[in-house]
Length: 213
Picture: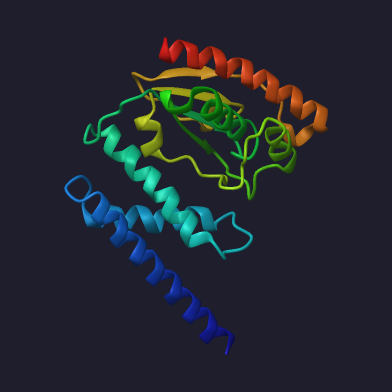
């Protein structure tokens, strides 16, 4: 019986992902073909499933992740115009430093900069202390989640900021690279995480000024 339930659950997920693929294919008609859309949707689900503890909302997260990847893919191929600079923040787990940098960039730059974040070895959830110290600034992280690093988002970025991911961070010609030396929030108490947050905020303010001046 458990095998039957497992097969039914798998079929349900596949049906949900196929529907997501159809929605996204309609949105990107004439830009990205249906086969590519479906591949990215299923790839995104598989990538997130590797670290997910529960799969209740995994299909919807996969659709959100795939949507952003499709935008990046279209941008990198020149099929969609980039109206503002694209910044990508990368750390190891995408659960601390890169999430803080992305959130602070959105807060500081608004619509003047588009930002993404990713992890070379993504974690399961955003670090609770990171959520806490960002909430202190009025930044809600409820919709965010760790995402794996993919080639499409790297190619779409104008500026790539790495934070401790070492050789796992890919290097592409023509990109602006910055490496920020920051302590890992997972190794710090709450005051330590606040200090990292403030350090990141200062760096983000400088970067946003350079990109938008």
